[in-house]
Length: 138
Image 1: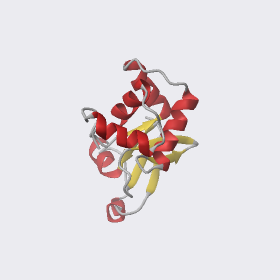
Image 2: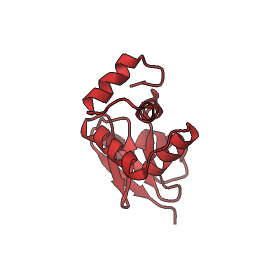
Image 3: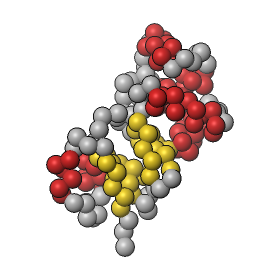
Image 4: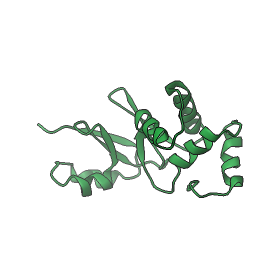
C-alpha cells in the first residue's frame, strides 16, 4: 500500500476502518508507514521518523495507533527479545533478527545483505511460515 502520495479518499478509508478521526499527525503517520515499500521498524524508529517530519506523538499514543493498525490487518507485529517490530508485509514469511544491529530483516533480504552470516539454507523451503530466526555472531 502506498499512501505517501495517495488522494485524501484512500487515506480516509484507512482512518475510518481504524475508527480514527483525521488529524495531521495520523495522516503523517500513515504516509510515513505506508510509502509503498516493505519495511520493518520499531516504535522508537518510527518515532524518530515522525519527529523528522515534525509530527509528534507520545509513545503511548504511537503504540496504541500501531496496535490498531495491527488489529485491522494493516501491519504485522513481530516480538523478538521483548521488543516489538512492525512489518508492512502482512503475509507469512521468515524474519531474521540481527542482535548486533537490533534490526529485523526478511530472510531474503538478510541473505543478500549479510552474506558473512551463517543462515541455514533449508529456511528457503519454509517461505510460507511465520518464523523469526535470532542470530548473533560469536
